[in-house]
Length: 162
Image 1 (tube, rainbow, N blue to C red):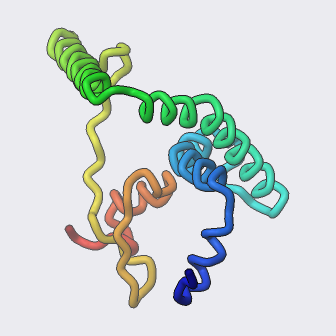
Image 2 (cartoon, rainbow, N blue to C red):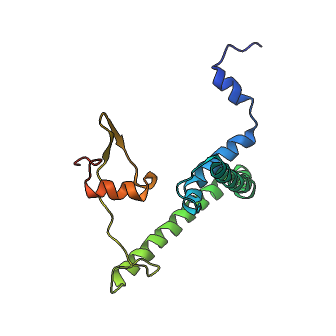
Image 3 (tube, rainbow, N blue to C red):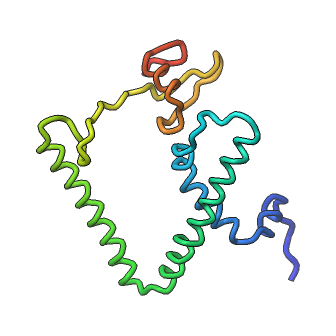
């Protein structure tokens, strides 16, 4: 049976091995963690970028082989009741952790988290930041550099009134 013409990008991606999809998913999961752990900030130069990508892709490959693939296999072989029990267990553990943290916060003589570290109030930043005279950008806190956060919180030329 003959297939109709497809989008050329779809045709190219359809030829790629499934392992690339697994790697892509794991890279997505790890990218912010690896960026946080990367000792050189910001990355400057192609050699540093190559090292960063090697670290990210290596960690993604390990995550795919050691965690994602075995978990997917177990999930596919599991009975529906076991899947439901697993989801409920994760919900209960998450709820217990939140309750323990809240209890620790209420008991603490000073403002500390469950680990005993001092809490700092969150910086309420404007949702929109002017990045160019004609461009307004929505910035997410975890994607901004510390200097950008300080600039936006300080209400400098780059910050708009919320």
